[in-house]
Image 1: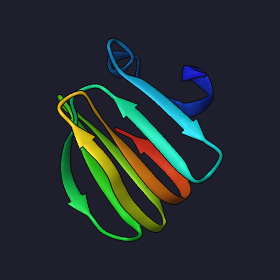
Image 2: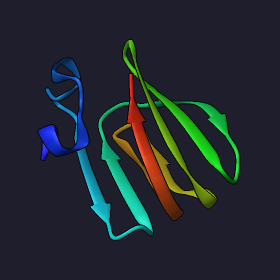
Image 3: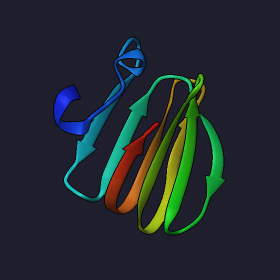
Image 4: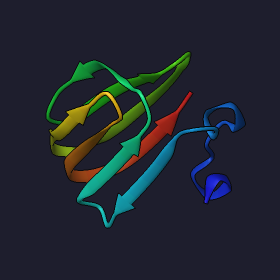
Amino acid sequence: MVKSLDVPTEIQSGFYIELYSEKEIVLTGRVDVIELGESVLKLRYFEHRIEICGEKLFIAAYTPDGIRICGKIIKIEFS
C-alpha cells in the first residue's frame, strides 16, 4: 500500500491512511491544517506535506489523534 500511494518512507511510522472509495479519507496521526477549501486541503505531518484535491471537500472530524475528510477525493500528494 505504501508503494502504491508513493508515500515517503519517513512518513510511514505512526501514521495511517484509510481511504474509503473516493468519498472519505481518515488520517490517523497528529496533523495540522494549513489550507482548507472545497477543492484542496493541505495538511502538515511534522515536516511533510499532504495535499488532498477533490470536490466539495470538508472536515467531518478533527481531533489531536487524526482527521476525517469527506467529499469526492480525486488526488492525494505527499511531499
